[in-house]
Length: 587
Ligand code: ATP
Ligand code: MG
Image (cartoon, helix red, strand yellow):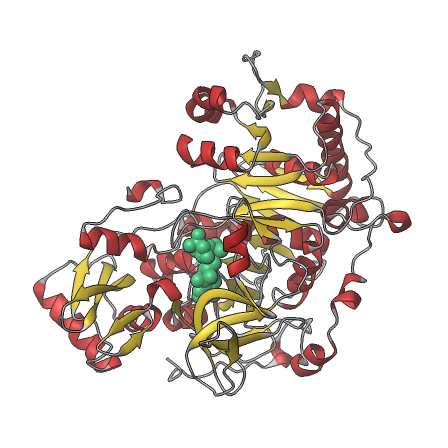
């Protein structure tokens, strides 16, 4: 994969000087306590509260009238919420929670599409020091119930339609769920409250109480790609990472129009769809509609988006339609594009250059890490296929488990091992909800083990190999699915690829690939042979797939990740496991 040409950067041609230029110096001198000083803290030594940093600190100064959230509804309607208005609305919600008797530390669940109330409720609940737990609005009743139950949901904010369809029937089994708030107007519905009534009765002034940075703020469930989702707990201190990574990895500046396409039901949609951009005082775009390439290009052009943060699954769908579809749009304002969530195949990085005139910058992190940990930076060369370099303040390493249970750092370049991070950055999860043992097992000595396998090259760039669970052991070789998938993606017929190990009596496992084809191609024996041949030429016989299956679509999580465990379970006729986060049209 490192055969791809490095994309060099010419800073002279960038519209502004990047926030991070001298990576080595910045990393060497970085100190989290100094980074904390980039934020305000609550007045009179009152601690640190995410909502203060995201909203209130801008709302009463020169940014008061600046648009904080530009919400574009599915209907095409728009609503601009300025910083002072966002402060008032979130204060009203905090006051409403207080009036309902909801206490600090209790959880407020959000089951909403990307509508303004979602953002107001999240930030208002943070002001009231409640724990915010956003859910995907497309979840079915079962995942909603289990998450509300294990997260001890005390309040749920949703719509009448979602409530009737998914929650009403479970209410009896959730005695802790004291209040359901419906955001739409309408006649009273038993055992629910109306947003409008609560908000108009509440004062727009709320003084955030002193907040210990270690108080719980967010509860985020992992994507469930490898098994049952875990509830990761984050604290107010996390905002330091959100802000710093917004500064360096996303290069946010206050005059940016920023668009993170992720839903807040996935951690990216909260850390970067709500918190990081607002702490920088940017205009944050909120688009309610689901992915559609033409709609997205239209939004990028019409809203003059300057920084865009998206995911490989969307990029692959755009690639399916071809670069020509981008041509008719004026994307002159766009200056930086980043991607997260899955490995970004080199083909996709390069397609960015072809279609948008700039590469997609891959970055790596997890629900557990709370924020971006490894990134390709605007000012630095991009190696297509690499996840990039650790953020200043983050120490990442490849480690190897030792017989005595400890881990040793692998110093040599390009040796595959466990990707580990030195514990201690602000947005590190503080626990898995109700899974103390599992949480404890993530740490060995000073290291947090991510569960991903990677390599580091001589320049310090990290290369993703695969999740530890997905790595294939074939005839003594350890094969990362990402490498095989990326090679298949180079073929003009392939839109998506997912690779698994299939048990085999001789080899232990053989590599089996599933591919979805681009429009204009159809499955045939001839294409299968062509793909097998292409992969063998590209990867060698030991690593190339032995079998290829054609699928119309690959099964994915709601955050767009290919679920290899499901490909495998289906192939082997095994139980499919937790499907709560499976994209519904894949079922
Ligand atoms: P679960 O832990 O429930 O199986 P998940 O790991 O997919 O789900 P997330 O926390 O949303 O849940 O995803 C983090 C994982 O996504 C990472 O550990 C990694 O495997 C993958 N990932 C994220 N970004 C990248 C990237 N840039 N390159 C490669 N893999 C990535
Ligand atoms: Mg995970």
